[in-house]
Image (tube, rainbow, N blue to C red; front, side, top):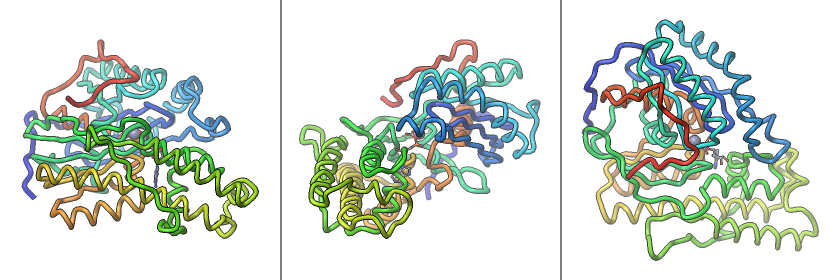
Amino acid sequence: MSTANVAATPFEGFVLGIETSCDDTACAVLDAEGRVLSSVVSSQLDVHRPFGGVVPEAASREHLRNWPAVSAAALEEAGVDWSDIGAVAATRGPGLVGSLLVGLSLGKAISYSLGVPFLAVHHLEGHLFSPLLQTGGASRSVPESMVGLVVSGGHTSLLAVDGPSGAVTSLAETRDDAIGEAFDKIGHRVGLPFPAGAEVDRLAELGDPAAQPFRVARIKSDELAFSYSGLKSQALRALGEIEAGNGGAAGASAAAGDDGSWPRDVLDLLAGFRRAAVAQLIDRLDRLSDERPVERLSVSGGVAANRLLRREVALWGERRGADVLLVPLRYCGDNAAMIAHAGLLRLRRGDTDDPRSADAESRIPFAG
Ligand code: KG4
Ligand code: ZN
């Protein structure tokens, strides 16, 4: 594999990562080689679940409440003290601004008080480079050229990383819903608890996608752009028809955990939905590689845990002769190891932020 190490400034310490952009309070410690020494994620799902989504005000309070225990656990697991921390990286956006402010402010204060460099990291930057993280080893070097597919509850983005400085440009975005959002809505409709993506994926394995096929959405004016609202509406409509035919809720009665009690047509529908959702990603990758060579593809974000997607991108890589870097399952969802890692990459380039002025922003573009 031809890769270029972008290291410019030697860095010898430990990097503390902080991620609080939504409802996970996360803290991680990486060493200077990008080895993950600890990655602690505290989920707030029990607080938000009764509301069917994340309640922003409650999320900020929970981050504040969780931080002391989460950070203490991350340091203890890594076997380091505060005085060993040589740099601090925290997510600055996008996300819920109240949640972001908690982690970013903590990061700024820690970096300022320790007198160490600070890095305000874009959440997508964290996901994009997370496939370079390895379980138990130093992180891989940033390839000279890489395409990144980031699929999560908030993003469906195709990005290009080029050159030794790792300049990132945006190739495509979703025009409407993010792919994870569509999984969550379909899951909610059949009575699964939020966020439903992982459970929809598991149940889809039990269905026959050919029994409930959906078309792959395309946008004529921008052939690489993604769109998930049409597929979501079609799937919701089909669920309504199944309900009308079955004379009741599509899946609520089965949501208690007994797989055998799910109606076959609902399982088929989930499988058909998942197949079309993943096929759209593969379609865009095909279109892109028809236009420009894609030597290396990184796939990351919460939806990168999807079983079908993991199988399909691996096959795509074989078909197209591309090296596919799939994020390890433990770093798919939001975590602070990916933030510390993105911070470390920037630190090596000497590209740091002023802890006195870095600000949180709910919506910020990442790439040009
Ligand atoms: O990256 P992430 O933790 O948070 C965001 O930045 O959005 O992604 C969370 C999203 C949720 O929509 C969740 O339902 C979805 O990832 N997700 C999945 C799977 N596991 C998590 N979607 C499909 N298949 C999965 N296995
Ligand atoms: Zn995320």
